[in-house]
Length: 371
Image (cartoon, rainbow, N blue to C red; front, side, top):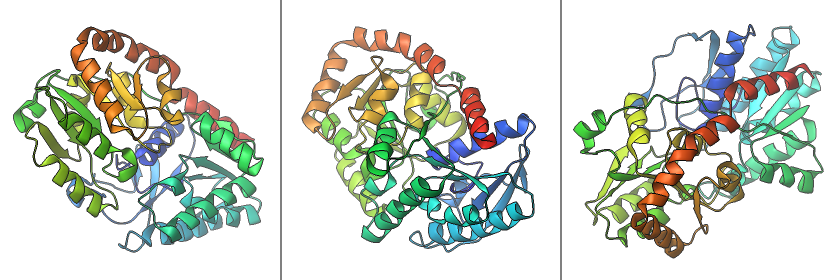
């Protein structure tokens, strides 16, 4: 596995996917190596998990790279691919699995030696506003390399599948992410730390980056008169200026709670006790936070991008992407119609857990490995 920051970690969706795939494959009797990046958690080294050389049977190989966020991914991908290719040449690996568009820029190397290569496109990363011109071009090059050289390309949404067919004439395999039924938690830690009670808050839980659309939600929420609070949970990634902008937008409203990055029990409690979950993204691959929120039986309000609407179907509310006034209107409607919120809560968990299953994801992925 190449392309994630590190496992175990919840730094992003890629890390969660690599964790789930790797550990479940090992339990089925496969040997898996995961190439971790050196460095600290993007939200601070205090969130780093203790890592040895083995994690739940997965062998962890740490690749040294620069601390500079503009260079670390490129250097990591280059070095990890060289090491993995050498090991594959000598028979250690049957397959090398690349995750995300950027790391796929090196995918041609193992193919040069006849090694089977799988690429998972977690989203059209070059569309994300946090990347500058050079980074966007490199991501697009990784995308083109995957389309041209990978034995199989996995996509997480029908929208991206259509994109690869239209732009590259490339057939891809649609394997969306999975989810497990969660453990529900009473609001103990979040009450103690943030003063939060069950159904007393609207939840945003994602990385604090521009493409997640948090600025729309803050502006819309501040125009409502609700006594419920808005909880913003998530760490910052490559966007210090945006984080400062978010803090400035939140400052005048005492109803808004910024928790920073959360994991473990606090994360479970936030999902378990939210009144409403909002995901206002401009760009997504397949949002694991949305799957998780629905698995906890949350009523969800999401932007109407295809990557969100494919997931929720008729089991969540939507608003027009980037439209603060439409988002405000939907928030006010739900605040005035709590019965509709409860109705959606009753159906969301069964719907999402029946449709998205990690065991099926692993089985389909292993079939692609075998060719």
